[in-house]
Picture 1 (cartoon, rainbow, N blue to C red):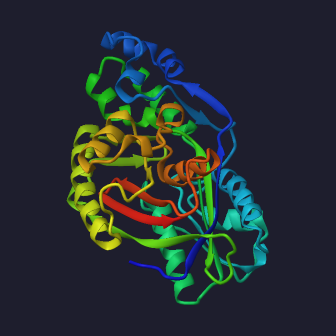
Picture 2 (tube, rainbow, N blue to C red):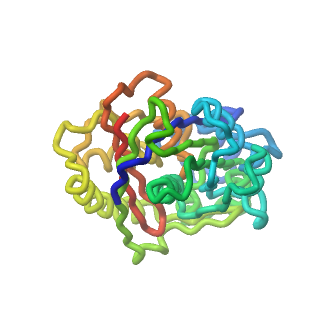
Length: 338
């Protein structure tokens, strides 16, 4: 899928308030880890994650998405009444209904003519939301669109700790729930617009997607827990990413050394290193946020992009690849020219 008229007007992120270390989680898991005779520092040792962020208790996904959206709208410098669609892509939700999107829409006081809805596709939601907004802009349906995401892992991690401590003797149960302990929290938002309206924008060239849904059993999450075959998910996900990368190389002409920044959805150290090694990616072009923020789900890609911009890693004319793998399995890759 290629776009000719779609520009990114702004991207913004909001870091959750509380830094929670892996050491702190291990202290709370002491009954389980003692029964397993697990060494100190196991969580960080296996994942490379020193810490993750949590919001205050009661702070909702819609609050996180709204916080990031206000920053993105201000940075874009547009009249919010011209936003034609708002898509929320978060895995976390305030309620089963109404949608998170309508809560954010109300918080932002957007126009009654602004369509709003939730889009769920595990960790690929934000990339999918960008493509939907891009299509709407390309065909002239809207002038501007807003993609948002708010993740809050506090509840699911705390419930997982309770569950694991209640059955401290089960090594298999710990292994199945281990990936939940990598989850972090945060908010992200992006304003996209038509090229003749956006001043000093960044061209969104489009994206490619492949599915391998025969692997839909490898990670299954509920509000209070997530069961994951971490090794199986990584192996199948990397294989799918390799095939998607070849499609992206053909679609966008990604030759060796042609990309200036690699914005990855990040799960852990092993996942990031394996993906980079398999695809032949230059580690110096990857901003690694997992050591301090963990796996922030679909918010991960826009958060990395926003932080890279904030740190001055991206220059005018830079070619940027966005890459994500979502449980299910699906894989998406896209390009932005800054």
